[in-house]
Length: 520
Image 1: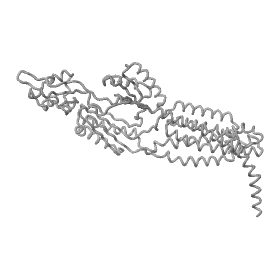
Image 2: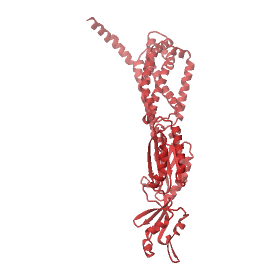
Image 3: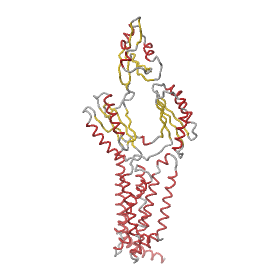
Image 4: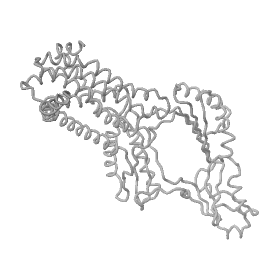
């Protein structure tokens, strides 16, 4: 094998390449995206239709059925699941993994556009998008106050939402856990009885045009009735001025028999943080952003925003992913240092301290090169890639150990350091390549999986492949260069303590015993 000899003859060039690769890997580590889980692109398409005030039955007939029929025209769509509620329909269309996601999206969008003319003309909105796991929240903030009314909390939440959405790296911000504002009409049954006005009469007048615009609720004793109005009302006074009955020239207005006011809908769910009334803001991030750096900026914004609010309102962090991600990265580097230390101790005991230094130098360089290649391949640091690096730590030392030990063996035979490095590396070079390839091939099939789990786990085999390939290249190029300069100082050719002990045992006990046994 000529590669070790070429590397030693061009040592400066090889060292420059190694240093450059190390720096690229280090810069990639500093700037590459970080997240909790791998970034996936699902062949899943979400269609959201909003038609305020429409009953679920009407939503299905007027909106959902035409949309589902249109989406079914796309051959690649395997499954359609729809969720319908009052005024809202969410359609989920799934295709098989491995399809061209953008091409299918164009087809879905084209079919939906073809039926837009069949949908109600006053449909409020119709949105189509590709589903993304990045929709998972990286941070949840809570505006907390027992004293402040919901309208104040919502005002603060709207202001904060605008500030958050302006931040680079923020994908979406949603406000959650607040009751919707509506008109509440509380009827006085005694007055209605005196004026001979029935409940059905009041409700019928309020929704006389029977249009699908949400109004609010009519309180009738212990029961509440949802109403839909024509949408012609401008304010509370106009609603209160609705004529509900007439007796000759005397008109009876709604305000005469009811209390009409803006109120909040009955809480179907209550937002609490540490037992206190809260409104939450949920933040998701872009695929390319660094979750740790982004979370740090958001915390700075929260601190500045808190100073602008009164003392009875607090802005707190209810949940964040960044500490878990940072913890995994820190744990990996602790494992890396522990691995290097243990490898160094074992190599020292068997081969001596100089081979131990050489092999321990190769480990972090291989890891950094692998991180750099991961970054250029478009992947982020997340729990799967970090776990893969930990797995690779136990595999990447083999090449360096085999090469270094063989170089040292030739030095003990009396060769000079350069000749020993060339001959020692060349002798085991093809064996090292073969053993590395067999290991790489055991991980390679995982890269061919096209399903959701396959895409989720893809960084596992790729990280191991990148790391072992880097260690192989370093073992055949960098290791003989360092060994030729570093091991030549070992004039006495000392080995490690355990190697010396085993040599003494072999020479003084084992060989004499073997010779004696062979005589018989």
